[in-house]
Length: 135
Image (cartoon, rainbow, N blue to C red; front, side, top):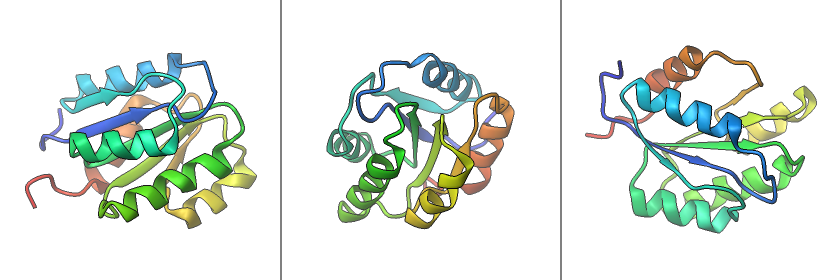
């Protein structure tokens, strides 16, 4: 169970129409005691940033399977920084080739989770790395 009341946005950037994994992760985070906001499919980076700002989240989880991760995820990072949310923990999951992970980390994504990652591992990473909502 989460010791802090963390607010997590789970988002599906781009034209990717598959959201089963995102919903599984969202439910797992909720079951761990986090408040989860799910955007639904086909969101632009600016829509994701706006929702993150409006919902005052500490974590943004981006699920992507479309292959557009190298373009869309850095746009979300830049948008969050532009809105003064540079301390938000940004994680990603989905079909992201290992060769692309370093570039995403350099762009500001904190961690890339591959398919099949246990929910407990994602929960632990968030709890250890998310900013304190009371700070």
